[in-house]
Length: 187
Image (cartoon, rainbow, N blue to C red; front, side):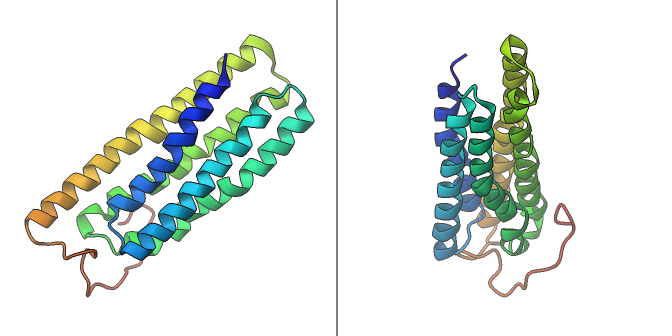
């Protein structure tokens, strides 16, 4: 199995998914550019660092590349879970839960990738290891991309409705609103 195809796909789609989330949140232009650039670059570096280890048979080398890829990985996951919290709280009430769900779904589904990556590091080899890897990555990809895409569509659809009703003003959901403390999924 050629892992290069999967990694080229990830090199393109992973940064774009994160940037898409930032764009649909309609943050102020400076915040959008800053967060989009940071998350886009960090995720591309993460994927680029993961590939050399993925194609290695030497377990020590695999662990080194895994550890290096985990540095930008933790930054991105932290940003999704914590760094976008205040921006999420500024969203219109009817999309806060959707934005939170997209953030948490991405973070949780991403947590599967490092474990799938180390399948070959824990003693599995050959076709069995490849099968487990491909199943693991495929399931994670469906959740991280397809389900995420449906959430992005729902956010964009609801925001479009609110804009057409005049309930969203300019770049901000409500320029006079103060961020509110919310629970796990924005409730």
